[in-house]
Length: 293
Image (cartoon, rainbow, N blue to C red; front, side, top):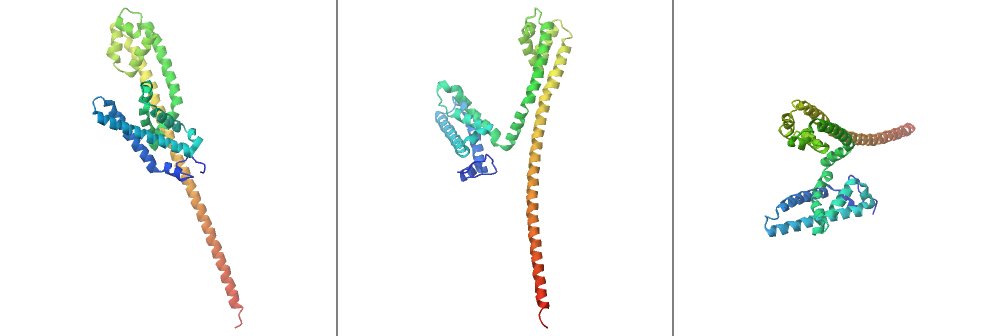
C-alpha cells in the first residue's frame, strides 16, 4: 500500500479514501452523539427498567467497538504517522480507556468514557478551528493568570493585615489568614454574594471605608484583568479566521494560476495551429501560381 498522507483532501489507497470520505466522518459524528445521549440516560440507571439498562449497555459497548475499529483502520492506513497528530493521541487514549473492563478497580477510568463525546471537537471542522484557536491562546492566558494571581496575592496580604485582626468570628473566617483572604477575594472577584457575605460583614465590624478597597479590587481583577481573557480569546479566533481566509485565497490564487497556465498553453497551441495553416495556405498559393497557364 502506498504511503498515507494524513491529508483529508488526498488519498493513496481505497481504504484511506473511505476513511477520509464525508459519509464516514458523518457516521462517526452520529455515533458520538448517540453515545452521548446513551451515557446521559444511563446516569438514571437506578430508576430505569433493567431490560432497558441492559440494552443501552449493549449499544454503548457496540459503539465502543466501532470506535476501536475506526482507530485500528487509521493505524493500519497511517501507521506511525497516526501518532504525529495530537488529536489522534486524544482519540487513541479515550478509546483505550473505554475498552478497560468495568470492574470496581477501574471504576474511575470507566467513568472517563464520557470523554469520547469530546471527539466532536476535532471531527466537526468549525469546532476544531475554535478549539485550536483556544489552545493557541493558552500561553497568553497563562501570563494573564499569573498577573491575576499576583494581584490577588497582594490584595490578600493587605486584607489579612487590615481586617484579620478582629474578634468577629465571621470576619476572622473570611480574612483570618492568607489562604482564607485569598479565597474570600476570589469570591469577591466572581461577584458571587460579595456585598452581603463579605463586604458588609467587614463594614459592620468597624471598617466603614472597606468598600473602597473591595471596589478597587473588583475593578482591577474583574473588570480589567478577567476581560483580558475574553480579549485574548477573541483575538486568537480572529487570527485563526484570518489564517483560514488567507489559506483560501492562496488556494484560489493557485487555481487561477493553473487555469492561466492551461489557457496560455491552449493559446500557444492555437497560435501554432494558425501559423501552420498559414504556412500551408502559402504553400498552396505558391503551387497554384507556379502552374502553367
